[in-house]
Structures are given as C-alpha cells and as structure tokens.
Length: 340
Image (cartoon, rainbow, N blue to C red; front, top):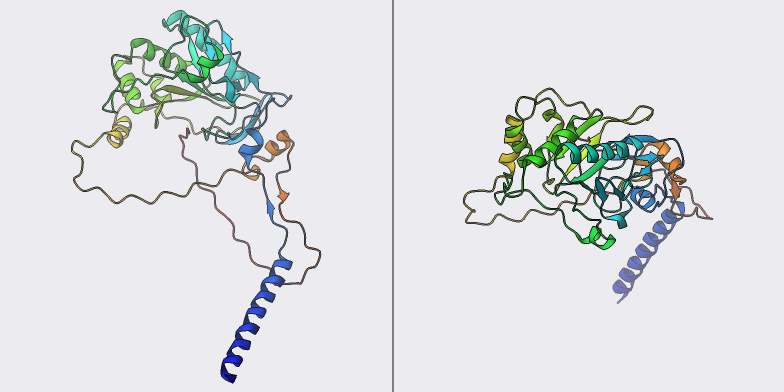
C-alpha cells in the first residue's frame, strides 16, 4: 500500500512539473508575427489605385497601380464573367485588346472577341483560379467568337467557352477548329510587346502545320496545360513600370519540333489500359498561400495594408527562456513559362 502511494505521488509531481514547464514556456512566447494572405487583401479590392499606371513585380507575384477597365461592350468585343470584377488591366493591355478585336474582325473574319479574365482592380493574387494575371498584363480570350447580339449579364455568367480539342486529347477537332482560329492567334502573337501566347499543345501543333512561310511569330506561342477553351495573352513589361519583371525572352526556334512533340507525348492516352490499377498516389499537400511579404514591398503600400501584423498579444508576465533559432524558408524557383 505504501509503495502504491509513493508511486502515485511521484506521478503527480511529474505531471505538475510538466504543466509548470509548459506554462512558463507559453508565458515566454514572443508575439507571432505574420503577414496577411495576399489574395484576401487584393481579392477584395473593388477599385483601382488612383496612381500612374505601373505593373509591379512578376506575373505570379505582383500587383498593379493605375488599372483601367476593359469596357464590357465594344464594337468588336464583349467581356465575360462580370461578377468576378476581373476586367481590369494595365492601359497597354486594354489598348492591345481593343486593337486586336477590331483588327481581327476587319481582317480575319472573326466576328468579335469574348474576353475572359484580365486582372483585379489592383492586380495581385486572386481568391480563386489563376496563379498569374497579377500585373494586368495577362488576358484570356475565348476560342468561340462573339455572337451577333449583346449577351445579357446572366448569359455572361453561364455561357460556356467551347473546346476545340478532339477526343484523343492530342489533336484539334476539325469540326470546331478553323482557319479563322489560326489567323486570330497569329495576329495576337504578332503585335509588338507580346511576350507569350499560351495554347494547348494540340493547338500549337495545328498552328505549326498551317503557318506557311511566315513563322516568325510561332516562337511566342507556347504549349501549356489546358488552354483548349481559350488562349492566354501575356504582354511584356511596359515602359515606366519600375520593378516589373519580364520572363526570359523566347528563343528563335519556332517550337514545332521536339518541344511540341514532347508535350503531346505526355498527354497521349495509353493504347491499352493497364490491367492492374496502380496504387493511388498520396495527395500532395496544397502550397501555402502567398502572403504580402512574398510580393514586392510596394504592393503592401498600394493596398494600404501593413505587410507584417501581430497575431498574438504580448504577454503581461514574461519569464526569460532561451531563444530558439529560426530556420529560413527557401522559396521554390519559378519556371520560365508559367500560366495558372
């Protein structure tokens, strides 16, 4: 009996000691400094920053000052998905889209553009969807032409873009793909200031086959995942946009050889389905969201938000404890072609 009592008291003292250590440690924690989630800041901005136009940062980590809206209706275009409030861009992008729409209607027999997402009023990361489109220099253009009437607000939310991809996943559907599609994309890639046009590899292959002798524009048309419902225009940094980071320039190769072939090989469906199903892969952990400190410092000032905030109040009673070393996190390197 005495032995049991002794064991009980030892256990009780151990628990009290552990609890006291945790209490002391909790009392000595420094305030946890964190940065606001960037998409929560920029995704809720409804008006542009009333400043001179300037694209700040990179296509997937940046923001936009002095944005201008693409009018929702024009002589040769209509803006889609208006509820997203993503018809904003750098004035250079807005001018590009208006010129492309009118030229394509006049010269390429394209009735008019249906324009998808550009950027938010201040650019920056979005609450849903794209990882890029942050500088006001990216635009999605649907691969089905504008109808010969003005779409209602409801139609602009519910109408679907049309895929031009065939069932095999590696070629275009010739009942949907036309010479007008090729002419439109060629024109979009040929204007000065275009950095890249992203399309599905099957579309790139179709363009390679019909390009003819003038192939100078093909190097700017890049194969990328998806992009068979729309093509994605990306402009280079405009003059005067201090701190805007361009992607590396494309090379002289037209990309119609090994590059497009390797893309199509990755997308080609196997001829025979494997008999034994492979073990399901463990789902990847989602990447942590970008925070204001991940963007250029000017973006926090543009949004009027402190880049660093204190999430935990400073304790009133502090017991000194040894400081813990902080590990530095390394950010993943971005690829040359990014479009998400």
